[in-house]
Amino acid sequence: MKAFILAAGLGTRLKPWTDHHPKALAVVNGKPLLQRNIEYLQHAGIRDVVVNVHHFAQQIINAIHENKGWGSDVQISDETDAVLETGGGLVKAQPFFAGETDFVVMNADILTDLDLNKMIQHHQHSGALATLATTQRTSSRYFLFDVAERLSGWTNTKTGEEKIMREPSPLHRAAFSGVHVINTELFQHIHRTGKFSMVDVYLDICAEQIIKGYDHSGGLLLDVGKPESLDKAASIFQ
Image (tube, rainbow, N blue to C red; front, side, top):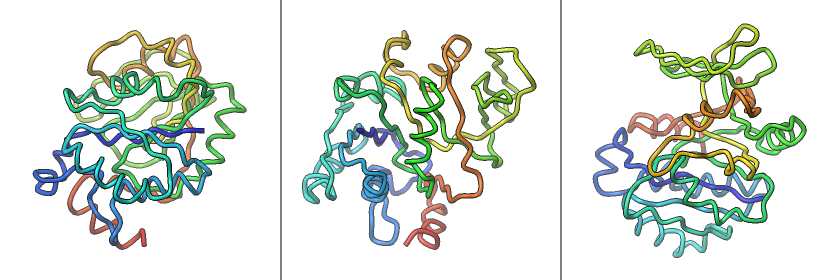
């Protein structure tokens, strides 16, 4: 199985670091986030990794080469010309996943102890087109799932925006953790082009296709997107 690490973002929340560096190379206890997540994937037996790059792309490419991929086979999906967000970036990287059945996608700026192998097994047994890691935590944006953990909508509590794509049983909110397990058949259902989010893709198709949630509440999950989060990460992740 392969994995796709999303590392192309501008990292505006992580300024001033990202004025001169990509967020994926922000350091926690001597290790860049990218290295930590490559090693996290190794613990799940995944050593074939694709990383997309845009912001200070060459710094990421150099770090990967200088460290021999930190023990993994790392390929680059180059978005230097234009950052494509999560959905556009995934479509651009599609050729790297030819011949695969399922693959993992994760944000470069999260740290977690989520049991990825259990999540992959859950995904494969459920028959879902994609499985999204979630927790019960406070956020401004939530996916909405039915009692069977099937994706049915999305809401933004700050703006009051809500999108209900299915009208099944009562819905509950869950915050997305930034980790997906995706069946490559999903590519056939993406009709957007250019720059777009995977959230929009999931909402486009969830009425017809099965997109599931995977709750890992109680474990460690840290969005290392702000300078103060780096300090917190250093106290948790050795």
